[in-house]
Length: 110
Image (cartoon, rainbow, N blue to C red; front, side):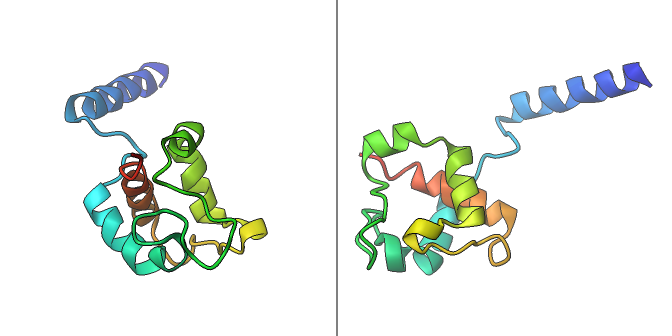
């Protein structure tokens, strides 16, 4: 049993390494469509935080991007941010769509 688990783990790691995929990589093109539909109303089409709340992050700011890992952004999208009025998107967007949005947000840094 121990060897089966280890073998499976090695095969999965090799698959993800060889295909260039990981469990949390998203598709930025798909993420852009989701972002424009669900996020741009508050975050602005270019992610500059131009929405109605003054607490919106500027996704085009390289310093913001460097200080927020993809997992952090995913968690904020999933759970929401009470202080800024951002709702939880967990029940509205699939996990894949949330990772796609994160991947798209990461392309906005200038």
